[in-house]
Length: 398
Image (cartoon, rainbow, N blue to C red):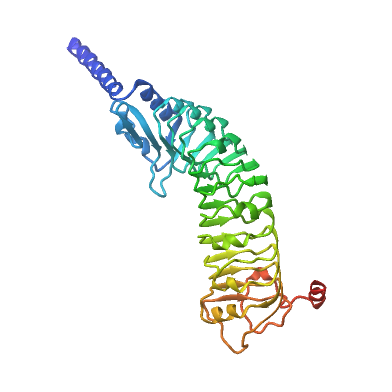
């Protein structure tokens, strides 16, 4: 009886080894061992069962998030991609660099911490790298500049610090760079890729000025808001005629706004809270639905070509003169949803005090050099004073 039991145990071991050999036969041994290292470095957060299918006695190419071509791993999507899933915890094992055929590497939002391994630079076939909404810290490895085929780089919503490696800007295949909501500092490197359509660097601590030709004309989405970037924008924006979204707000940009930008196919233009100055003169009727130029140092009269904007924020500037008649017509027809003109030096608006402003329209004329013809609700932060002190109006006019 004891001999039979011993033989049965031995047979079980043989079967187990046989399964492992089969797994190795299905997948390159280096990739197999690499997946084991990755598994040991990460765990499911409570409520997640992503790794339940990672049974190394079976074919790893059938694991959740593992995609193979022949005997090599070509894509690794770690974690349950469904919205609201708890995600993973742990670190990215440096062994990741041994997956030499890897073209796509993603990790769902969770609690992955630690630095990005420098071995990522060994993934010469990588085209898509997305590790957002985790707790990745440290600096962006300069070795990422060796990934000449990479198209999407998304490291957003982490705790990355240091500068954006200059060499990342030399990657000619980049189409999406998303590094927003980190702690990055230093200047924005020039980008050489003529395929770059999305650049999102908002909510960092970037400074310095932009290189005059550092942003390629292929850009369609540009967000640099909530940084400390300086310098003029006219020469930079004038070249980017494919833009459909622009947010340069809450920086320290200076100079004038090029009139030609209002002719671009932009759906949302955010230039508020900078140090932009001078008159604003669109070349044609502005068809951009939302334009925010508030909290700058813009001056001169308000162009009637802005009357076609649905949501227009010109408040907290130095605009003078009367509000164009075309604005009144659009206001009364409910074609304008938001018109904020408060905190300027405007002297009047031709509107009948007895008319009712459509309830769908928000109009604020507070703190200008005029007696308000109509009472309209203003945002709370506009303050309580209805008109600007006469002395300020005289001094400004003088």
